[in-house]
Length: 234
Image 1 (cartoon, one colour):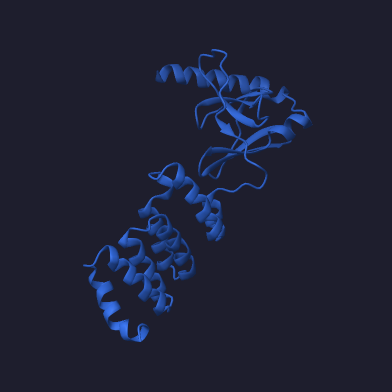
Image 2 (cartoon, rainbow, N blue to C red):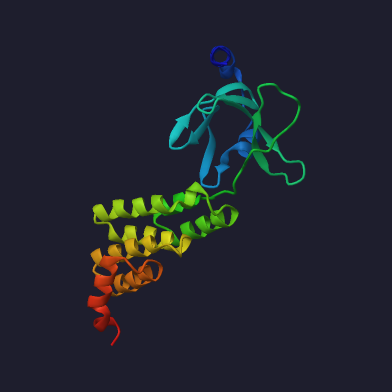
């Protein structure tokens, strides 16, 4: 299998050096196919053209595919061949995977997203926590066990910002984690700690109390709530 793939890759490279420079993309084709395609619920493949050459941006890496013909190209990073297809009913564009042994079946694999579409992680990176949360909640509706809403990963991101003293960012991320995992004591404990470091003792108190609802044996939370009770519950 490895030798077969190596041979195929060599053939593809030979094709690119001999054919791709002769491919001309019409302006209409470029307009229809350029854009962002949904690789998964929180990942995009950006398609664009520069100097009549096709490029992809995927996972922060610029990729120049091997152009076999105008509507067929090979992406070595994915080890897949693709073509652009338009759904006959919805008229939406897709990136379609071409199987190694073509059987004439067209698949609609990666949908072209509307202009300006952003994934939840992009909103999160921009600090737009409201839209990020809305996107993550949509993912949770579809798959409550999705790796994109992993509690530990959000907690890790929050603590990374706390270490850098970026408390507002930490709070924004940890609030999303609490909304995604509302029955976890740990999310409220972490959020309380972030508020405490940000000198918001009231919110720290509220979230430590919430943490105790789900894990009454949390000793740091118990100590804080006991010490602050008279201040906030007069």
